[in-house]
Image (tube, rainbow, N blue to C red; front, top):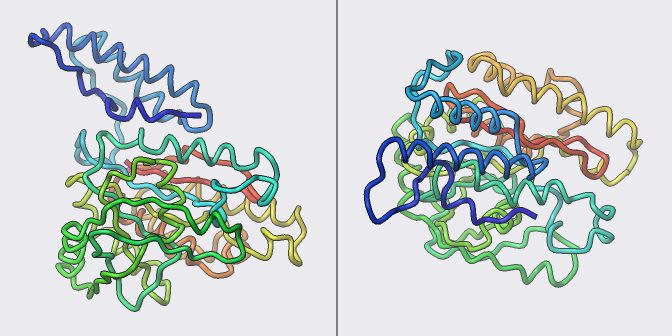
Length: 353
């Protein structure tokens, strides 16, 4: 199981010393830190991505040589901002799965990789976020609506699960000031918004974040989807929110890359069809996240043309958080650091930046 202790030093914040370190010693310290993290990431299994490991290799090599050489060109990245937050679309699984026995919901070990991925999520941000903004598949409103409670309650939006799953607590503070900043950015581009000061954290938020940030110490709030589930509308919302990434806000879209409940529960759909359909759609998603940004957005707007699209998402609310994330990604390329099979379906996470 991953630990959180590395988070505070990721990536490249030098440990304080009594006397200022020379540039040579700073470079050596950072070089050693990168090598240690690279070793950690290799040991982390599913969470470690080739892109992340390559970044450690490039940085280590540059420090060893002195002045960094020009890296391979990525034309979509017009500016490089070291402290810019990434944007993430993650699969939040089924109900309160981490907090009940595997035998009650799946098979032993089925959720292990997803758990490891979520427990390691915080290492992908360059520093501890100022706030967490979650776009959950489980909240829809007529206009994009922000949660403004300073102390959001828990909202157990699932049914017929064990009693203890209705006692889960994740008491993170709200972030009303940042929520109002979201409204400001959206209204600046002509998108009408609303606020809700009673809404609580649904399981699309507290399930992954209780694993990723168990201390519940980072101000957190949600932004709703918009009824009608128009892809372009949600991409535009994401575009408007991109500046938050330079303000310390970690934007997370929480849904599922595959969400056909009848198939997942084995009701009228064969196990093989579920596996084949989810694989076809998952591979399409993995290919588009690293595509040129205008083509990526076009493909997302026309997602129903993808292989097994409607078989994977009879209703698209669990896919729409990806549209917001892709919009907020700007020109950043994407990766798929987590891919797995759960409940007989292929699922993935997509990261940008």
